[in-house]
Image (cartoon, rainbow, N blue to C red; front, side):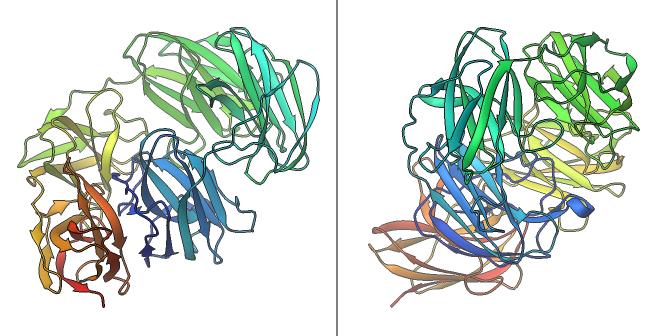
Length: 614
């Protein structure tokens, strides 16, 4: 992987923990707002998907403020570029994505607004296929959006002819739109149709909250294919609602027609009890759900904390499941149960007692045929086994044991940790490809960090993580694949607090070695820290060379709360594995150089040189 990061302005870097359910062997590379980098997608980078659906990618970490408007541009002449944005640690569902937003062929431009302050992962990838190549990636801040004009009034059964143009307001994501206002009563159901021959239309409905558009529902494609949009919406409360007529990408312009009608009646749900199995059939006479897709609905009653498993099997079509809570909100959906089949499976712990609804449908809009739907009570999440620092335990994942929401069997362990301590978890197995996750205990387990092959010895896992606070943590040891099972061992080690920085003089060379006892970045790389004193606007050349690891340089400041603020960084400025950073101090004072590895788990000898630039 060839990267040379050219920092164009000072920014806060992401403090993110890598992947969630999917394997990734290296932590995301920090990218700065205002910076541009050059990189290459090659055989050293990870891939996702199977066969025709596989793609190659590299991940970049960033931190954003709530409401911050950002734009990422990826240009590559060797492949069709594609960008995705995820919340840190949740790379199974993209917040935003773009293929050809620049309108220049194979280049991508993703505009987005951070929904909340925190850490994000920007994925630069091929649209399809694993043949990569060189590309550039930039991240910039966009100016504040212009004030939107007052929306027009939309009346039922009256078709409106409109047009999107460069004079229209932009959404937070950069897409042009026209806005229409409607007044609805609680429980009112309306259907919105948006059609255009000039662009791929998207209809969105929401409410204005403190001057910002809060989306409640949206639809891209009508059932049966085509570019038109069709959305059925049930108003949750009395009040004024906003409909936005917009395009799938921010280059959409042209004429459209918009129409509001009374919505069809909701799907009539058939009763089903937990423990029941029913034989059903999708037919052309079935009703449609709120996005216009043919579906059958079933309702069941559950108690608070009950854990259920829902299975939908069919030989006639690609099965698709969606679960809705008592308030009508979607609680999850599934297509292929995490594997390559066509059956669906959902496992959920239900937070509240009440009536739940399951929609059974096909992945395609027009599919019909027989199916089997089964709802059973899943085994409750067992009490996690205590594990102490310095202890190694033996465990087994069985076919009939507890499974997580992704369908993997797992065994859970708990331990008490101290803020700032570094916990290292190693999972070894001769029976399966191991996967380890570290998070907080509770019904809604969410991984703070995870690892697949961090040990670098094949299929075993090693995760080293700096604990963000004092309290109880949960570790889940599982196979990477959903159907795997077998024996494993798990070891928990306390790597101690972060070592304090040493010192280095301008004009000196330090020789050091990265080991698994060294300090740990928030992304999981080992590093040695060196303090330097620099004069105002003093220009320095910092180099790090190593034959044992992919060297990475990071220079910044230690903040009052103990955190590290990165000011500039470099990966391959000297060569493919050696780093070189040309840097100027903005003011006189103490700075910290982090000599670290590019990837997680890398150790070995290095030299660090700090020279004054003539």
